[in-house]
Every structure is written in structure tokens, then in C-alpha cells.
Length: 482
Image 1 (cartoon, rainbow, N blue to C red):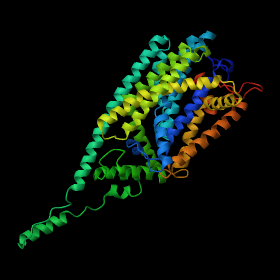
Image 2 (image 1 turned 135 degrees about the horizontal axis):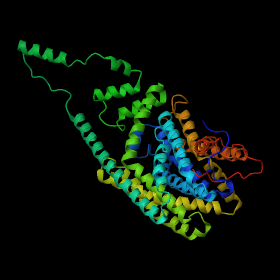
Image 3 (image 1 turned 180 degrees about the horizontal axis):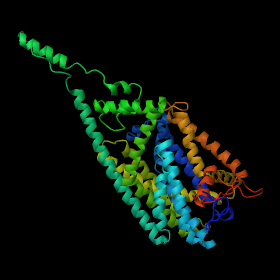
Image 4 (image 1 turned 120 degrees about the vertical axis):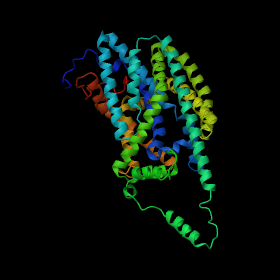
């Protein structure tokens, strides 16, 4: 049972020691991730196997390419690096207090709580949860926390490259599978429905033809067929049995049934589709993405130890902004172009290689831009940094709230709009929800020290109920080391 008074030696980082720049980066990452995730919230997973604009109107096409170049695969690397940076920040604070011995136990509790939150989020609301992966990568990062930057950064880069190569291999195999499915579909479409029987007046031949015709009568519906009429998930299983579905989630009939389950229910069918897709995510993560994310954790911890947040590192940051954007943007353009041919193994591999390298490069650039924004002195820019920092300080609460709002809009237990909205409409929703989150975060932090989920997370981390309400006159923006 959680104690009512704090007894752990390790304790949260107090506001004066916190860094606004990291919160600003988290706030920016929240927006970027929401831009990408809204597509997964709102339409069948198979659509992402064929990344092309949904329509030919100029706004849809423009938003598609803006998202592909500047958002997709650019902000989970930023969040991952921030996680590694947060660990170093907490470790430094513990050492300053002489509480390093209790740090490992405290941080393991933190990761355990994040594992539970991620599991509940992924299985209960949305299959694309990343918190579970973060909790597991955090365990490895914790064991290597004392490594110097000259070890953390090269190992991190190596792990990113390993994850990139592994995922490119999966993309190549998937491309071969899609090409084979397309070939089978063409063969089926070109094959005659049935051979013409030879003309014959022989009585026995007529009897054989009659018997053959009767044999081709479709069988009576069985129990699965009857149940499938009201259950999209069972209809999907029935489709595989009858070979009406021959591919994976990208099969048109599979996507139709997945859309029906999320849009109209029943709940059990939507849940079964979600669990199955979540399991696919877990497999892909174990085989490739885990190593990519872990490498980004190492890089984040390394650059934090180098002192990237120190104002004296401004020249280094300018170099990283230039390298990140000047190299990352062209690679991202190539990735988007190659991804439009998912059945071509060579182009599918190239899309992953360029995207998984360009994404982290751009994430480093975004991080340095956020740190620069936090140091700006202009009134308008400072207000923007303050607002983004407030949203970033409540990153966990806002991340989960984006899922809750999106599922209420698109899933059957809410407005049931799954598969119905255009890309511009979804962008409008993202901007509206995020703007509201920024405003609410600023107001909330005037009264409370942290967001509601951050409060629960920290209470478990330090095994003591944390104070939530803010003392009057206290600072309203500071950095959460999450």
C-alpha cells in the first residue's frame, strides 16, 4: 500500500532545477505525434500499407506530403530521446541529494508503472501504444546509466542502424507478400469461372452433368456463417476460411470488416481486432522497433550528459539544427516517394532506410529548435514557449487524453465516425484538440503541480502520495523528467 507520507530517499526534481526547453520539446512532440496518430485512430490499419493521398484535391495531397516529410517517424524519436534525457536528469538530481543508492529501486517502480499504463492503453483503448516499449527500453537504459557520452552516443547510433536494417528486412518481406497477393488476384480474375461442358445426347452423360451441377451448389450456411452476420471479427475468420480474404490487414474485405467493427461494434469485435493488431505491433517491435527506440534512448542520454541544454552549447545546437534538417528533410522526401510502391521490395527497403535515418536526424534538429525557443526573450515567443511547456509538462496526461478524445469521436461507443473523415478534417481536429490541451494545461498548472496522470505515476514511483495542489505564488512551468 502506498504510504501517505514520502519516505523514499529519492524524490522528484523540484521546479527551480527543471529545464523549460525539455518541456517545450515535449509539447512540440505531442502535436507531431497526434498528427500521425490521428490517421491510425480514424481508419483501418491496412490503409498504411499503401501510403498514398486519399483523394486528388490539392489540400489533401499537400497535407499528406507535409505529414510524410515533417511528421511521420519524426516525433517518436524526439520523445524517445527526451526519455533518455529525463533519466539522466533524475539521476543527476539523486546524486546531488546523495540518494543514488535508492535511485535504481525508485526508477524500476517508475518503469513498472509505465508498463502497466502502456498495457492498459494498448489493449483497452488503442493498439498503437508506445509506453510499453518505452518501459522495456528504460530497463536497459537504467542498467547503462553510468556510461559516458563517448559510449552512449556511438552505441545509440549503432542500435538505431540495427533497428533500421531489421525493419527494412521486414518491409522487404512484406513487399514480396503484397506482390504475391496481387499476382494471385490477377490470376483469379483472369481465370474462367467454369469450363463449358461438352455437348452430348448420351443419357449417362446427361446424368453426370446433372450430378456435377448439383455438386457445385453452395453449401448451406453453417454456425460460423450465421454468427458472422452480426460479428465483423467472426466474418473476418469466415472470410479466411472461404478464401474471400487472402492477404493481411491490407486486404479490402479485411479493411471493410475492421472499419465496421470500430464504427458500429459490437464492443467485443472491436476489442478482438484491437488485440490482434496490438499483437502484430508487439511482434514488429520485438523484431526491429525496440532496437531503434533503445538507440534513441542512448543518444538522448548521451547528448544530455554532453550538456546540450546548456546555453553555452548554442553553437553545437546550430550545427545540429543544420545537419538534422538539411540531411533529414531530403532523406524524408525520398522515403515518402519510395513508400508509394509497397509491392516493390527494393523501394520498400529504401523507404525504411531513408525514413529511419532521416527521422532521428530531424528529431535532433527539432530538439535543438525547441531548446532555442525556450531561451528566446521576445514576449510573444516566450508566451508560446510557456504554453508549449505547460502542455509538455503534462505529456503523459495529454498523450492519453488524445486517445480518449479520438476514440470517442471515431469508435462506436462515441460518435462512430471511423473511416468517414477526410485528412483536412482530421488535421482540423488535431489542431483544435491540441490548442485546447495547451490552454487547459496552462490553467491546470496554475492550481496544481502536475497533471493527473503524472501525479499518479509519481506517487507510485516514489511510493508515497505526492502533493498535487500548488502553493500560491509558485512557478507554473517546469520540466517533468519523464
